[in-house]
Length: 141
Image (cartoon, rainbow, N blue to C red; front, side, top):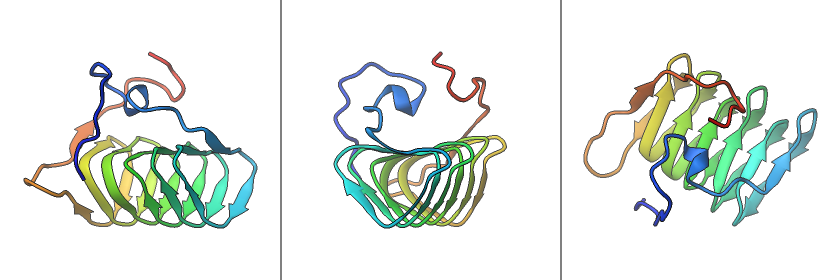
């Protein structure tokens, strides 16, 4: 997937570069079915089903998703049992637990984040980025 046109300055965090998700599955909420749309999606509860989004898909700490995600941007902080496809940029944060395959141009895995599956990175072979999270979840700086 080609790099989207980003007219914003360089930021360290993905969520600072792309619009915030407009759809939310709240904590303590369960949903079964497919989510499809042009806006981003934030999951704080439980979802059984696939997500197809043209925006940022964010799985918060404590959230659980059983299904595949097709989107350009993904932040995984909770649990994902499924694949991430056609992604430009994926971040697996330190609280994440993911089982599935990833197709991404850019992949960052935080120390402590758990991933089991295969990774396909189109174009030149680029190794995944490893990093230590220095901010707490929800810290705006």
